[in-house]
Image 1 (cartoon, rainbow, N blue to C red):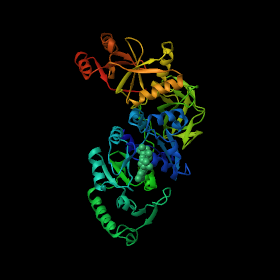
Image 2: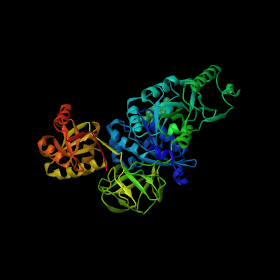
Image 3: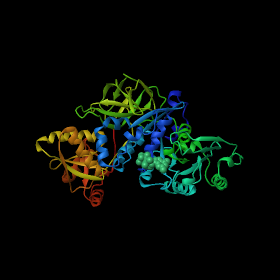
Image 4: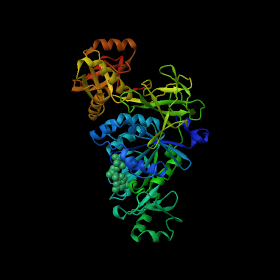
Length: 533
Ligand code: GDP
């Protein structure tokens, strides 16, 4: 992968101007606010507040339900495209709630960079750390935005140290905050030797920039109180001595993260961050498949990383989100759906421009398009111009919570099968059909998902369901030679189930079960993740 990156040819301009990224953060750090300001500066919305009203403030169950009812909105918020100068930004939304982390992980397979937002008072929090680890697995470049600098925050060096130590990544300051909390007046832009001053009065305005000849410029004193200026000079000198300088290659390889300080709510530091994304967030990168798929390849290829049920529960259509890995897509194109070995005319693809969906007349490598379908497209599926390509690295994780699911009305068990299959295909849950007994076992990553599922099954299928505890606590995929797996399954029938792809799964009660298999069945192996295809 790295070799492919370092000898990259120049990309066609339409591809080279694309930046496809996600924001990772702990809930409350300011992701929604920052997204809103991106759209504001990108000219995609006229006024702040539009995203907040519709965005994913899904803190509570009832919020989530409301959003589920209003699915069009959540669909359009899943990927947003907007222009920034000569760049086209594609921001892919990651669900904020930790219960939805699997979805988030998969989203990160579709982007070329991540923006890590941290709260200046809280530093690196648990969810940030988890998401960061996933980015690290993929060597994703990470740009950091330290938010809420208008409030009391930690010392700048402490924040940087914490990131470096906690996440084992080098950090280079792109800007340096001046003053703290109520005294915070803005930042010194270390990359361009400029002073950026925050306007507390008008939250939707771009900060005032004072162009200076370095830190010694006498004009500094006109804008910065003496004690803050002395501190700034001392800090910057120390930072330049102790911290690594910005090195684009290092950033793009994911070893070095530039950090900007700002206040999303005050629109401060946002434009500089966006300029940073344009400058250092890489252009569309080759994607991992059985062979590396380069963006400049003429033929179109892409993969589904997310499936979302559509707004109308009466029509079971869904939108599959496709990351284009290569080529120039035109509406109406016939693409090969590799898994199904079928041709598919993509006549009504959608692009998500801020709050509106628009028909995508064309799209380029790096873009995210939505393809409405009736369930043919699943997570991990490849679309190509004929090549039987399989993308790799799209994980499916073992669920952390399992419950049995039964239809409230036994006559409707068939409908339950259908409903659960849909959610399994959407990636909203793992659905296992036990080899022994009846009913289904549903696996999720967080408890809230059971409630959401029950409510959606009732809403979309008119089917009340019950979730009940089972003796099982986790599940592992079984791999090995065909015969070995069959023999293992026959001998352990009470533990065996099949997932929605028909793959054999071993349901476990205790770690002891897993250890026992490792000991007694050397010919099979149990894994906690499986690659979707
Ligand atoms: P998310 O959960 O990461 O999407 O966070 P939100 O964008 O919803 O922000 C969480 C809370 O922090 C909200 O009440 C925001 O108004 C507030 N907030 C966001 N950015 C800032 C900021 O720069 N300064 C301050 N003081 N509050 C902020």
